[in-house]
Amino acid sequence: MRRRPVVLVTGANGEMGHGLITQLAGTPEFDVLALDIKELDPGMAAQCAATIVGDILDQRLLERLVSEFEIHAIFHLAALLSTRAEFTPETAHEVNVTGTLNLLKLAVEQSRWHGQDVKFLFPSSIAIYGFPSLHAKNQAGRVTEAQHNNPTTMYGCNKLYCEHLGRYYAHHYRQLAVEVEKRGVDFRSIRFPGLLSAFTVPHGGTSDYGPEMVHHAAQGQPYACFVREDTRISFMAMPDAIAALLGLMRAPRAALTRDVYNIAAYNPSAGEFRDLVEKAFPGAEIDFVPDLRRQAIVDSWPIDIDDEAARRDWGFRPEYDLARTFDEYLVPNVRARYVTAG
Ligand code: SER
Image (cartoon, rainbow, N blue to C red; front, side, top):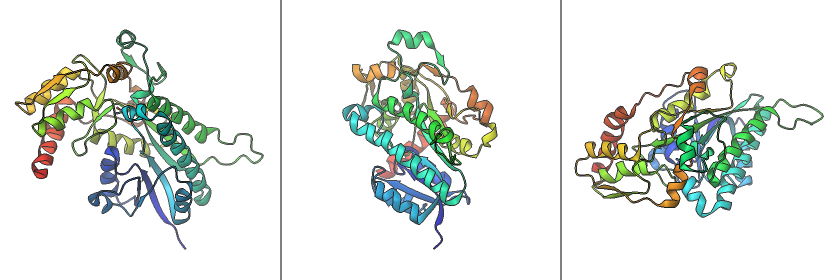
């Protein structure tokens, strides 16, 4: 029996999953196998070659995948985000770390079957950075990949460790085995900033105040922003995030000088963000009621991100600046979403 060649997307029903599947399904090179803990939205499922409801912690399920599908690339998007993870840190560790380990193992096994490297695309995060104080964050300014890797959240710790796991599987896996095996995992990771999506409402993140402002305003609901007006971190529009994942996947291996790349597009303060939302949705009611503990998490994340390596090695260029993100992406699509939802 011939197994079906596919690209596996975990966390398919999440924010990034939706955007990614739409893009992947539009290209003839990929059949998508979507995996999520929840039933995939019907519109999404229609774009996939196969969908599976299941848990990345379920070893048997992953073993079954090996027998049915020939997996050539994995976009491992499933994760518990930073706010959510602080409520159940040990569960977050299981999902974020053990889940990733299971998929790296799956990638090795798949590569043994079909003899080619399995590309493993892993979204990491600005949460892997960590400053002990707002003063230290302000002093540091723009950060490179190697600086200030001292996360204060379970999610940040998990993502940072998984970056290392990916590097291990790609370059050092079973390095003492008698027969040195071809390693088989081509690990590529992007540290994303806060993401702004028009089509899905975020949940469980700490950068969610950005998108939440827009989605509340579009529905005519007041919004109490949980960080101070002067809070500043990097953000980008979801279409650029998806394009970046695909861009990194397609880059020739020889062009890549790193396993993990920073990217970002802009870094408005929460107050500047509010101004744009009010301009787009006159009458929007937004005020600032900082939640000191979530504030501390955002204050531990950098003000700005150095993404020179991504620009140089694989041509990363965001297409959406902040004005275009609002005018052409967020405002029309978010408005249409709630008109339709009615
Ligand atoms: N958006 C994520 C979060 O807030 C950070 O990667 O958890």
